[in-house]
Length: 340
Image (cartoon, rainbow, N blue to C red):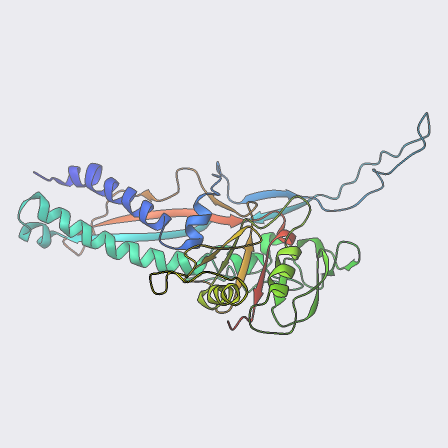
């Protein structure tokens, strides 16, 4: 027979694990980010050491005993990311426990309540992972794609990593401001020649998808040894790539009507994935430096059940403490304004 202790120690943990598994594959971007998890041991914030300053401590020399330079350069910058707190809850009224007959009926109650929790937290996290870190309910949200991928300006949630990009622009060879190195690669697909950290990149003047625009976007986000590991976009961007491939790649007709469609799409060897929560008309170029960093023992942790003082019910809260970080935003970016 199910007891309050059995519910707390067996039923709830089982459904919590299932909820985590379901969220892992609930959206394309979340599935991608779950593969990048690095736990935070503790502390009130995530601190990343950043240093992009050039110095005179490297050059050629004539050999022998010619003097070499060795100055201490105190040019390190810290990027800091605050924890973001997310929650979900399941409430089971006592009367439902009484009316339900048998263990199976009680489990069905939990199944329905956790399905509701899954739908709710999926929508919240699916939206925030693309967001700009804006404050909601008096608290910060995730440092999402639109927080990391800004240039010359700060997102609505404040400076990404605490490093302001306001007034910073230009390439690694010719830049101004204090944090041009911290700019991401932000393009309008029809913006023509545009400057990013790598240099001047021309995406063309069309709002429809072209090889020129996609190759320029990939090139801008290929910096040193870093290259996009995937392109993530909305339906318009993804269909635009499909249409481009159908126009340019010859394929023999298949017996099954419509069978010539591409079930999996890549460009320049980079997987291109559609995500329901991506901003309209947008591709985002991501790489392995974008990390999901949950606090140890704070990632989908099930809290002790709560009994309201004025209601015959039990509430089971789940808590998620995490943020998203990136240490080289000049290797990722966004291309928007895509109509097809």
